[in-house]
Image (tube, rainbow, N blue to C red; front, side):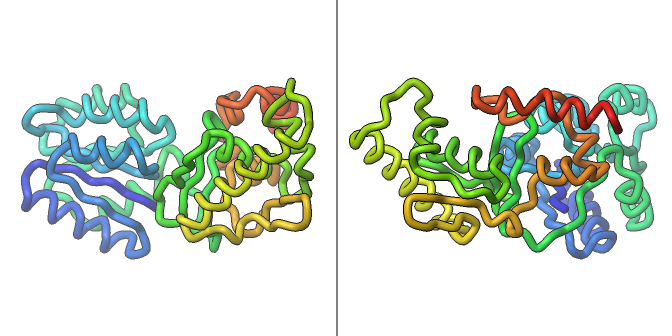
Length: 267
């Protein structure tokens, strides 16, 4: 579980951070004194929960929460304050919880045990893959994997979709370049894309998630924590996280939505 915390008072932030760590020792906790720094971090790194002080200089916790929801609609918001008059505003944002100061370990634990959006259990996966909405990939510690080529990222998305099935270079070319002629020039370009994808995975320390054989590639799905895979296993949290979008930036992924809708409607 990855948790963000913000309070512009150093002592209050220290108490909040210590309480979170005591309540969930295995969580990754990132404290911030400045809301702008929290937003900067959240724009590049996903989080499951955010504890937000409501009264801060420059920006309120309510305003900060709105911007966080734009970055990550699935984040659980827990407001921390000494003033009850903000309860209505907090609930309007579908907040997961509301803690009155002074913060206690018991109060933090109670809120984390009753999150609006349950957090999937920790797995031994080395790569976390987000397919619902836009496709994105993160390492186990929450860092987004950077791809130098957009087609390299799209290739990984297609391999994830294939769920471990082997894909030939010719098939990959047909998906990435739907209208292109499959010739030597295109084969060479696809090989460059494959090399770029593997380089990105290598830089993130997770190259083993792709198995490479002569003229073909496949995902080692045992190393992935993927919302799409969990959805297909009818995991409740994954099913609830589906909002009608699948790898939205890739046209070839659109036909999958009909199948996902059928599964979703039957739950």
